[in-house]
Length: 93
Image (cartoon, rainbow, N blue to C red; front, side, top):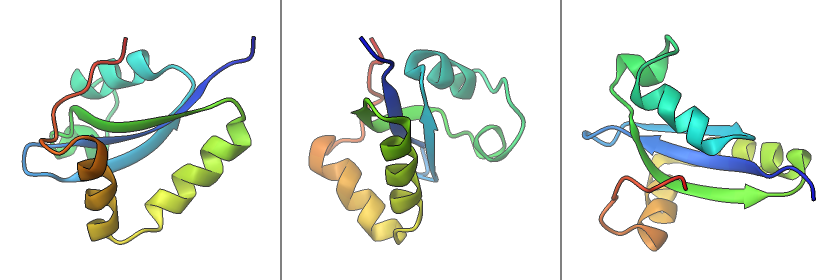
């Protein structure tokens, strides 16, 4: 069985967004929630997992991450709202 890769979107309470890719979603979300890495997410309090997709091919995951990052904010919001209308903090397990 191969490794799984995730494209994910984190949000702050004020709905600032961050799009990322990882091969270990639970660990990465933990890092964001606990501000273990300096940068955009810790600075803006981006600590809620509001969307993710799983991929078996790392190249597809990276391609999708770049695609979503290139979208306008409105399209990202529509993607999140389609599967998570209330923007709940999603479980990783």
